[in-house]
Length: 332
Image (cartoon, rainbow, N blue to C red; front, side):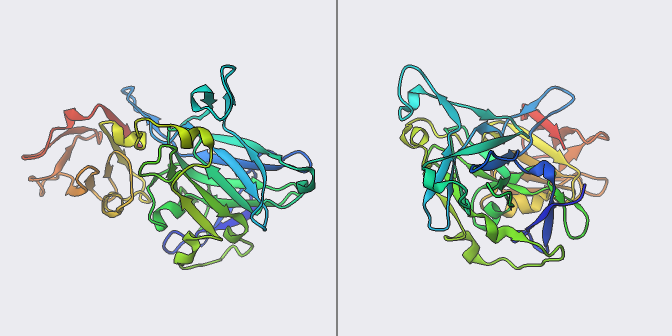
């Protein structure tokens, strides 16, 4: 399928334009409305039935702003309970986005005078205390224009990120591309409460576009990761902070994808997720200690991580905990 437009890969070394197709766009909005698609990262289930729960969570509260910074439209990510008002978190029932899933949101115009205005900035707020990891955001304006943004921005801007395992399109090298994802959470913890994106800044008509990272891209008026969600339900909620759920579970991931680096994951200060093995690199990353170890081989027999012929964990060597501690093992 041919790309309809290209999103600039400002946040990946050597990356240029990523082609987005019709499948990555939200459904066409009604006249005068703006539509937004939010895609979250993919977890998975192993043949043994182990389930990873990390990337899916509460549907965001999303707002659209015009070029004057005026909020012209919004949509919540839940429903009001009959027992209370929408400002009372205990009476609010957020909807969820499943792992690997997406939501198409149609934003409601706040005033008649805002009809058909261009929603140049999209603000995505956590809709509750169940964090999500956003792989990409796309929008379609009332006039039919389409724009996109990649979750790679979180890593470049010093925020918590993970591997999305979501297929977006093809890069300028015609290779299939899977972006990183950006964590947001409504619990006022380590994760941002949301982000604002000036969508036209991330668009290009040049399929051979190349760019270098500019720190100014992480700041307003282009983009902003802010600490607290603007959704009152999430902001007013006082409870136990949920780290991305991948951090709360004793889990291990093995991956054959060369784009997914155990070294990069371990060494980056804001990466988040379970312990990770890159079979391409032959490395294991302990995410709790940020320690890298080689996989065991006939020539590497000490202080290594051992795998059997099916690449399933059977144990680590001396002075390191055993693999049976892992309650979940997932193969990508």
